[in-house]
Image 1: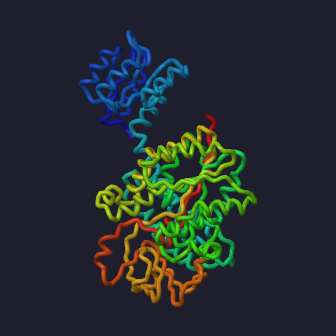
Image 2: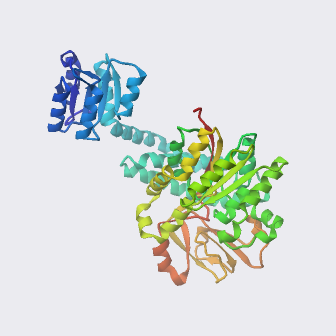
Image 3: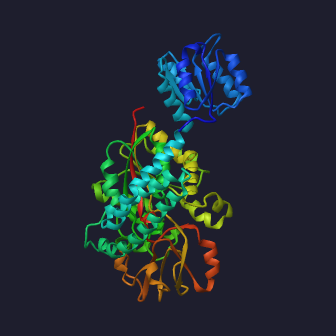
Length: 522
């Protein structure tokens, strides 16, 4: 990319010796002004709009870092490359601390200077162009893998790669490429739904080997971490894979992050998926062991009151001993300081599992449908990712994780299920006793206008559910459909189209992250 219309200020007291460098930049279209001292540099900077400043670290009468401070007063966003003869760590650290954009050590060749200039002025555009080319080359392979997906591992790997492409391409301005990714995701969603209708009942019945699911997670991922040191078990409710992948880089300075994927059980809703996570069992087994705790309500308050006891019992069953457990459920920031104090006290005990459930993302996802402000702020997947990252960066959870890293504590970080942006209504005919969720329905004499939009069964064993009353029907929405009633068709369509919902069958709801966080040395 040439440098036409780009203007550079080069400040160096030996500027005459840099004539070859100046000509090299000018031959490539850059306009280069020069100054040999700080006062002249500041004066020029005040009169002209410069895209970049090359600033010598040692100038007569003052240092380059002092001049940098004066330039920042004129324009806090000025882009600056510091050029110095010093390779000392202290000089580099101070320059980086002053937010220089790059750092060159003399003698630098004309081509090294050009590379640094190009990286800063055109790096984003060049990166976007390269990314678009990479996606274009990868597209035939992604298409073929979608057509050939036959196993849980196939679907999980392809979904994870498409999520990465969506995140990377969304910021490039290449709307057509984002549309291509979304078209592939829609096709994968359709294939996944058909595949799950065949295989999920077999997983539940033990008729075929299942992938890692909610009921396996504690046994396969948490138990291996137990020892003399405390372990944090963090569940961030209703977290999609793409949301996780934009917050995980924030953890990288503090932890080595080992990510894997697992499958949420059905329905992909808190009363079922999170209980299965903590109990290590499908609903039928939970109901058999604890009949007084179970009913077919989809109300979280009635079904999720016993998570700590379920987890404690599972840990004891798997280890053969009583494992110390501290459990907290966090709904907002009001009690964060008290909760953090209790957690810090809890992890001082040897071998403790500190289990933390954070509900912010779930509350935001549900509240979005009811709030025009939230709907506007988180209007699509990309915006939801941004809101999630912004919240996490300032959350008590992130602060607590940093404290855990400083203490050298390992963390198992996961979620119970994801959510999907629903676009298409499907009409369901139901009696008043049907459950209220928009992605799944249980009730007598349920039927749907278009059977292709749902996974329907009258056999509770297909879902690993306990016996129910005669005539019970179970419907789970596929792809991005949501249920509407014929009597309130327009109201529900207007209210819930473009809502993030969960409870049904889609990669977004079922294929979710679990990550082992290993503290980095302090």
